[in-house]
Amino acid sequence: MPVMPRPSILSVEPYVGGESKVPGVNRIVKLSSNEGPFGPPPAAIAAIAEAGREAHRYPDGGATALREAIGRHHGLDPARIVTGNGSDEILALLILAYGGEGTELVMSAHGFLMYELTGRWAGCSVIKVPEKNLVADVDGLIAACGPRTRLVILANPNNPTGALLPQSEVNRLRAGLREDILLILDSAYAEYVEDPGYDPGQALVDAGTNTVMTRTFSKVWGLGGIRLGWCYGPPAIIDVLNRVRGPFNVSAPAMAAGIAALSEPDWVGKSVRHNSEWRARMTQGLEKLGLTVHPSHGNFILVDFGSTEAAKAADAHLRSRGLIVRGVGVYALPSCLRITIGTAEECGMVLEALADFRHG
Ligand code: PMP
Image (tube, rainbow, N blue to C red; front, side, top):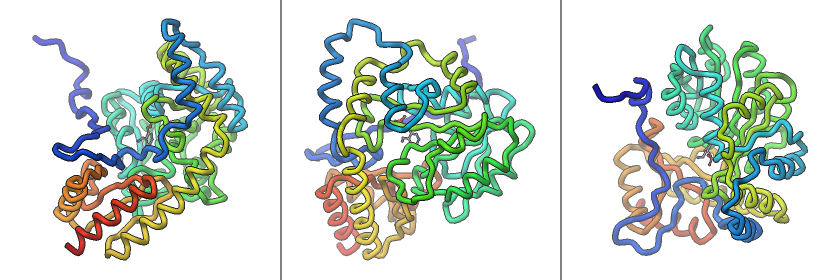
């Protein structure tokens, strides 16, 4: 008999991401992972190099200076922050700690893929609730929760749809869930939201003992390659995360990069202004070509080509010009492509390529 993992693990396909090559094409423009378009903040590049000089030492296992810097930047108590190797790690730890065999995890049908993958390998039954016009359905999410439900996870804004659930609806979701259900608000794209009523999760976390907010340095902060995310939560949940995380789960260069990024003047402002301008221009440009663009509150747009064949052909056409975007068949949206907002030049290249695709 071969050694075998728990059966649920073999039901999960390995995650494939980060593709950055097209055979035969020299210049690649990668718009498939919702990375910031401006590279890393310059102060972070310098800090990573500097941290390398001490790379023979283990990092601070408590990430004290980083948690303090995050706390100062966001007005949060550093004692209620845990940092991780990307927010993916923190999401996985929460799912393993609060879910597992015999429990249910409830999510929106087109919610972020990792909830389902991690939920399944953790042994949870994953319940996917249909949306209304691709926006999470609060009544459906509440109704889907049964006695075994331990976790509800909502990305707001959501990836890959770009949809934003209004704050009153997020509040109604929390109020409609039993107290023993952990609500995870995944606010990976929080910085891009322009709705003045939006709260990435702080208020709901502070209002109770059963809601957490996860955040990342991978998107607006331009540090996807360094792997750095964090969670803000009630003391008892932070305590659990500190028990289950690896002792040195954030590397010294990652900590240094995060602290330096937070000190970069107007980095978020500059990125958000660019994003908002080019998200609108891309949306209008593609709508003029007769394509459907779902309203997005993130740094990407979800474009519907009308059929799976058309989306595949558009993808191939973009690739032939070195433009790598994301097919979302895995999210059961096979007629759509998700396109990250790049630099002005990169957005121009996508618009031109798709105009040629539609007219040529
Ligand atoms: N949540 C959402 C909604 C995301 O889109 C992503 C990145 N694709 C993540 C979490 C994970 O981000 P990271 O692990 O890089 O922090």
